[in-house]
Image (cartoon, rainbow, N blue to C red; front, side):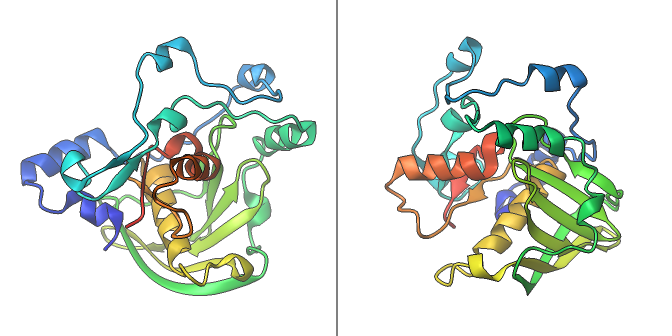
Length: 250
């Protein structure tokens, strides 16, 4: 069962309505202004955010199902996600990130992830009948945002914002209620044989969080020890940046 379905399981109609009102589906494209580009700081340190953000301290720990609204065990990553600042000492990485902000994603049309393996899945998304238009679906506006997502000709392209690497490719099948995804292509060499369905969970999370705007927990690999909090936080931020508020191993 997907995280999204678990999120709404067992809630009353009134509770569901309240959750939906707080998480309206959005198709707006995140943009970066020219002044933002000029003022983007690139250095050689990683530091915590501004004083206002530091006023609130979040405990990085596991929360039981009865301690959170998701009704599953989750790990609180907000101390990193909301306060960490991504910087790099490599000017080539910074230049590449800035250059990629100008891309509309059309260069990925007809391309697939390296060593592409085709995987069948069954993911359904309810957008109340609204369809996602072609073009830029999600664009990282700062280095704390790790993904760019595009849609063209009923296909979705999931690209790393720092490198421009096409990591996932999926189809997009319009339905009466929204759309389905039943095909994902990813690098065969990067599939974890001990956790072969992990990447499907990542794609599902990216669609829910980056495209549809829902705040849901992201998956973590089975290879990460649940008791190693530092590794969980490091993985969460490097993979999902400020979108990685909560993690789950379920």
